[in-house]
Length: 88
Image 1 (cartoon, rainbow, N blue to C red):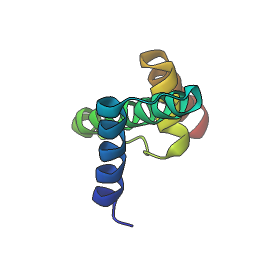
Image 2: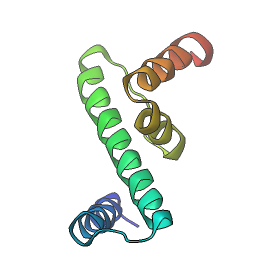
Image 3: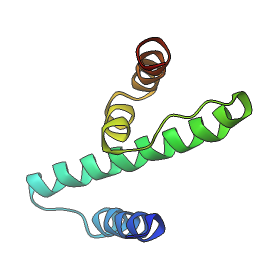
Image 4: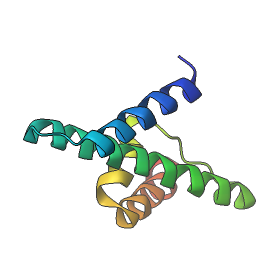
């Protein structure tokens, strides 16, 4: 599927969960996880946009979006250090 379709579906699901609410605790956990994944992907997108000025790119995939979404800025810093020190 196209990335725009996937992002649209995830955004629609998040909007639906925010408007209606999830009465079941497990659905709340899934919704929170989906929101964190989306926020992590957006953080990586902005990192790649800003990193393009310095010729730096960090791939956006499920693992990197999970790390950056659940750990926040320290997770992004850990991903950058891992990429620079270990992979390159």
